[in-house]
Length: 255
Image 1: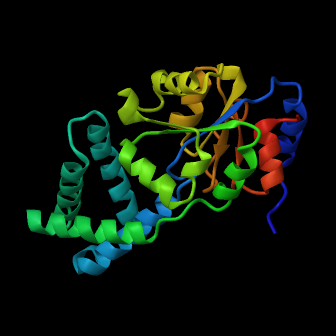
Image 2: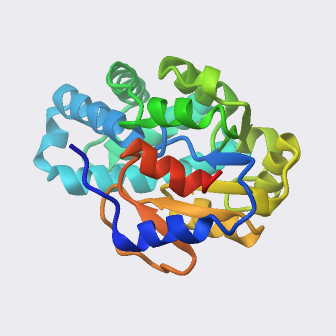
């Protein structure tokens, strides 16, 4: 059974009744609705099996090194400087080369190993499907995400979330990535909502919480890994998408 929400969140439920009714709720996708970290860890485990030299590095350091490189190369995809396929080859060539002298064939094989394990592990965040289904009759649902559209559409479809999402806005569509205000304004335009009629839910403090707050959208931080809460006055935090009724009340307010 899920634990009850903290007192500060329960207090927010009371205060929220005084706010304007929420007409739409925005969600980040990766690690908010789709369990990207779980899939990535499956991919990294497959790499260590396929390239035994990688197993000498402690997994935490191994994962951190990959995540830093992923973010660096992914920014070039978002800017249009690299295609996803070219980015994958560059990412794995650089990742392997930090441990041994790798070839382009090694990078290609690593990419295939990682991608196959990643795809096999795909799953939604616990409670995501149920929460969106519960919210859908009461508010429009939008997703705002830093990635190329076709990858995010596939994730939503695989997880059974596509029929619950009214608006999908990607950084590829807008030409800028979160936390840039333009991507949030694009979502507001598609939803035909003002900022004070929308709530943003995301796991990335800078991209989701700070970004949305800068355009006047109230935010709720999904802090699944118990990171320090940077500013409780800027956003309330939740640690999971359950209990469903209480999370829905937090997002929608009293009606």
